[in-house]
Length: 408
Image (cartoon, rainbow, N blue to C red; front, top):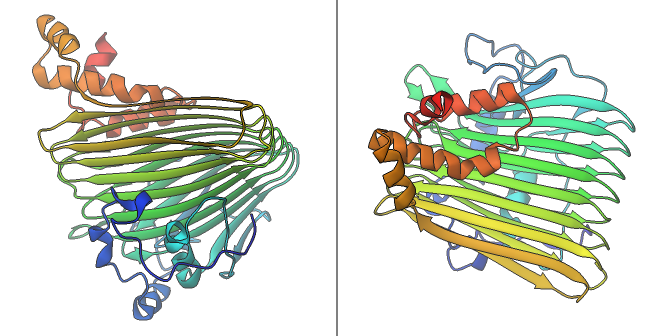
């Protein structure tokens, strides 16, 4: 990626093509750019001042755990860091991907200006590492992560985003996250991302992923609120570039209950021969929930032999629910195999009738159908303990589904 693009001078609006379904109103009142806010956040405790008594951590899911509180590494809650993990000051760099407007990189540039530190991880050649990054939000934060996987290395990464509980309830937090990941030749990344937001949490993120020759990446992401009464909103912007014959599997599930809103724009550029991308999105909008997923596949002229498959599906389970899924194909060569499908629909009435005829309660029957809908993504989780924890967390959104599925 070159360094020639300039930062956007204004925030995105609903008139910008890739932002029309994002809940930008929820972000308008967040003081991300206020230097006074940055100074206050900088004064928050960063190490031993915050203890386990202040923050309840979930069960460990990897050998090494790193905890960020409001975007800053918390040494008291983290494991001792190996030499390959470094804390660096913010650095000014502007990334560019073909066909990307500077508006789409606005929040990344904002993070660069306001971040307090950069957490950098390097996985050495031909080595394996398990890492859990736990991001806890209490106020306004701009965390920054950089991961570099050397040739033939393998990383199992679990990235979790939680809203902190306080004595008066859940904190109303706002996070602007920036992640940059580079995979060298034959590197492998197994990447689980779990956003479980609460209260009035607002989460926005920009992801940059580069894959070299024969690299392999599988992402499984789940985005939800902690309960149906939360009014959380999220926006994910991702830029992926295949610099070689790499293989990418991008699997995302999102549940928007009540008045929650989750939106994503994923731009994947195939810039080398033989690149392969599989993309799956499953979303459920209930009540007045809103979902958006824009999957943009670009195949450059020299990316001969590229294969890309998209399956984008959303389910409407509320009279005022809204979902928008948009597959985009931008292809500059004939030597390519590309397929895409996008649907927005309601619960299958025939299947619902069948479940009701078996004596299953209506609420449980609907939950079972919703569970089956998102299981296309959750079934790709290789870790059984983590899968069970995720299932347990969905009890409030899918009442009765987990218990009924276990009895079948």
